[in-house]
Image 1: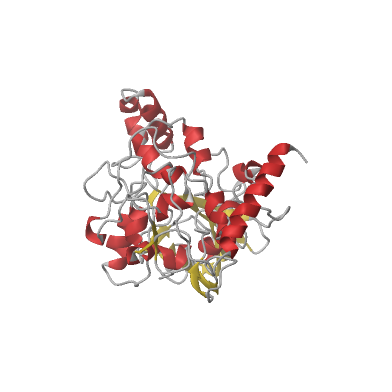
Image 2: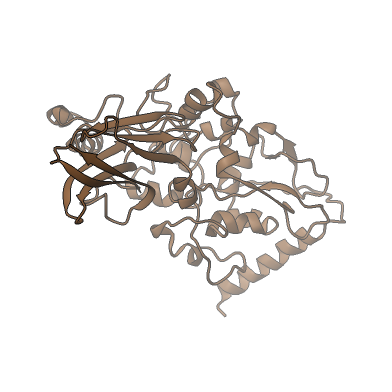
Length: 408
């Protein structure tokens, strides 16, 4: 056993001694001099189940390839050698920003390494722009729970925590998520643009009355347990820190419905109804490389394919629709921005993302000889629409429908 491992075990033992001393009166409350750079492992010494969800995705269905070695990068706690999933996107936010080379960009840093912030009122909720170079190496527990004055915000009263707790009901509202999941480059929502998730929820879901759920209700489902192990406290409803989303099959399967209609009997005309029934925001949302593909195929009774069509639903890179017509204009932009915009424009026009509660009807008039046919439609979700073959390259099928038609 090397000396680093010994030090880690000693640190674990000391932290667990603190956690188990629930009957003691703490003369001095724990403080967090490192601010949002406080390692999540520090909080995980007491909040063990929550830590395992956050850093390993235990109990989730996340599949994040670049996080395969995440357990080797943390060693503060004794964790299981094998788990069913991988770390959450929040735990791996440093991977995203490293890939883009944006460590010094205040816009990127404000989400990936945020400064302590106060949760805004719902109608004023927005991103708080951080200073370049602040924060830690990734999002930590402190990113959301540490207040600007160095206390820990929570939603349940406690007298046995070794640190000060400030009750803040806003921690359970979408206003918390707005700090990152919105775009402060604009003073209003730009429909169809990426990084508008909070605005999509607020304007398309909450205000029209589609539901009363906050972001946490779907992405942080609650379970009954102790909020911290080793303390003499009763189990209660505690949010799971998994944030199932873009990598979650659970979320995908419950988001869109799909049906096929033959509007006029005997005619080849078809209509594909795609409805956002389960997401409190647009599908896809947040990142512009994400997309949903609708692939429709028509086969005759012998199984021979007679017609095929593919639609792509995606977010626009900028405040205007992606379009090949702008490729020459893209060259005039700064290098990094030009490359990103040109990649989107090169794919040409596409269907916009399906907004919360929206029913999108897509008509198709294939040319078919008289006869009987089987129409098959499938919805696929991809994290990267720019792959060479995004429809069939490792995508998740999230919807399926068939219809037998007769043409005369």
